[in-house]
Length: 119
Length: 113
Image (cartoon, rainbow over all chains, first blue to last red; front, side, top):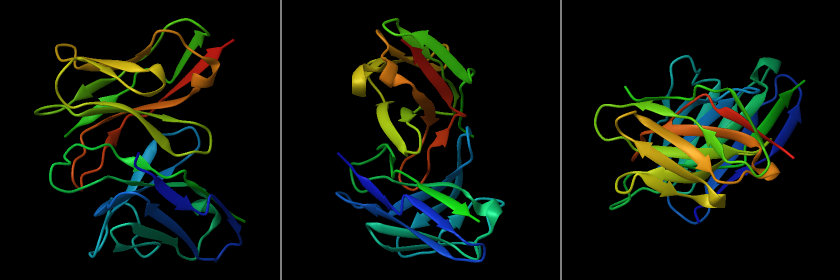
């Protein structure tokens, strides 16, 4: 089945540090990947849609200069949390969907998430 | 706009009993519906989807869901619950190409031995 690999699984760092999270589709190509943030005991909040070879589309209220997204290839998207502060501590999850001819309404496949803790 | 509602924050069921996790949807046009499960500190795992066809959809781990157009519902079911089914369950709607799924708020299922 479709596998999405997300690294690292956990990051603990000091305030002011920039943190990069990688999301890879291992056995399929994904022209589009999605980045979510999840607070404790809450649903997923879509942060941005990452498109291969073009700029990401950010949801309202999400700072694009704070959360830098790069989708360099059909199998890799990265999220960089720049100058992270304690309020950025959260669980970040990436997702990807197989795209292409004849692949409409495919499920989104999710990485295992990254627990980010900013001290 | 598409949306799903999960009316229950928490569902408790005894091991071996049938379980139901409720979901209702609101869409214009044909609904494309999904169920996911999330275990602690993990991403979401796909369980099943309804695109078209039979109203009863079978998925992973013995789960199934019944699509009911007249009631705009897509409830998740399992005939006999296991303690290991305890997790957070999300219903979702829509999504194709570069359009993300829209998720419900989630329902926490606790199966008690």
